Image (tube, rainbow, N blue to C red; front, side):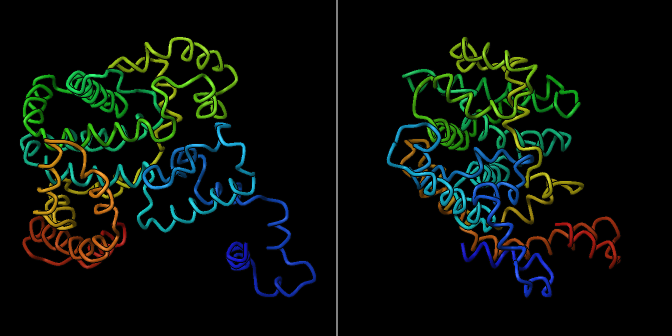
Length: 359
């Protein structure tokens, strides 16, 4: 609570702090820890029920909100929300779906870029967005892995992935060339190491908030109910009555599309990395140097056998030391390469400064 007070005190003019009633203290008395940090984390923009959970290391969140542990007190829950929110702002090794999804997206971008060089950049961008956003789809359990057999689950996952890939094109209002899609699909199928990495990772996301094969109506009500408009409440009821049909399908229905508007974040960090940039050059300069290539290759090879190295890889790609050490040198290389290409070596300082600031 002392930390909260210091944060709030910084929001008010110094002269107000010496009055009889400190406005920061008054503010704290009216709002809970959870509510305060929900505001900071832009509850409307990012689904706080998914992003404020560390889904890899801490089992505590498996129980809160589901009534499974009667020993947990409201104060414990509030403190946990505060911890998750602070860690989310700090970003350091916080394994929520957004951070893990970013890491998976960066590895996928670097490993699959050569497949997309012959196609318009949107095909690569929408592929990366699909990789990232499916982290939320599976965490929310809108889709599950329904079979006992690993190969059957994998085959169904491939179908689902490419259906979602097409869905992203629809959402961005872009037409997809079916010939391109089939060519890209054939080449990606050969990247079994990356696909198995995604396969195992999404499976872990799938059981992080609720381990039931098919969750009860209460789970989806908890996850979606607060954000569904009154006139659409019957949609949630319809979904939960036929939940096996929807969660087992590799297609995305109109009902699920409604839920995706709630589950998927309205804004994502990956978009800012690639917004108005040369996506291929961005990967070649900024992303390619983030991680040790040999180490990543060793990790990827391991997924052809099993997922025993998945947690170790998640720790590695979410270690911000990699970003602190390599990212900004990559930004510098990107900027210099871009302007050398476009301006034959002539420096345009204002444009360079603006681009550097945005990145």
